[in-house]
Image (cartoon, rainbow, N blue to C red; front, side, top):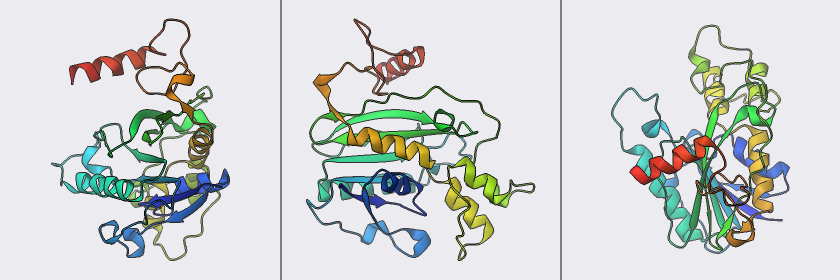
Length: 249
């Protein structure tokens, strides 16, 4: 059984998915429970992996004000914890506009996933960076995208008129209705809306259990984890566009 540290856990939908796949998850401090990662120092050489979704507002395409700098500070805290704990691997969740993180000694793979690839009725995009000390990669044999019948679940829905029923909102994230009795109703929607859908988390957890050596399989060079055949370097037109953007940057 792998021991995993979950940073910025909130109500930890990401960690729930890993637990469902047999990982043992230890949750670090979180502001909603009165903790602060800046005061936290994880033990070295105890954890197999570190997971977490740092605050994304500064990197979001929906942002309507200048970046506060807080997003970069929290990314730096995630990197600090990884470099101090030195797990075999880490997984960071954020939005596509997040900068690359480069903890010393880790090879890093970036990829996106959508909720409707995992049987959910929404198509919200989630972005990940997976890092390995042993130069391992994730092979992501994704299901076909399913139909979309609902708007995406977001953290702000709880403050809106006409918000969806709580049980329906939780179902969009792959959850039964959570009690969260100590939370206000808007805080409940915010906590669940911020989370990674549980079926998506389980998919990544399984991929981590089956991670491969970089040289053992031919994958798309954009880092998406899709297999390619023959002389192909990229899997999809979107992958080629991503590679071209990286070259321009």
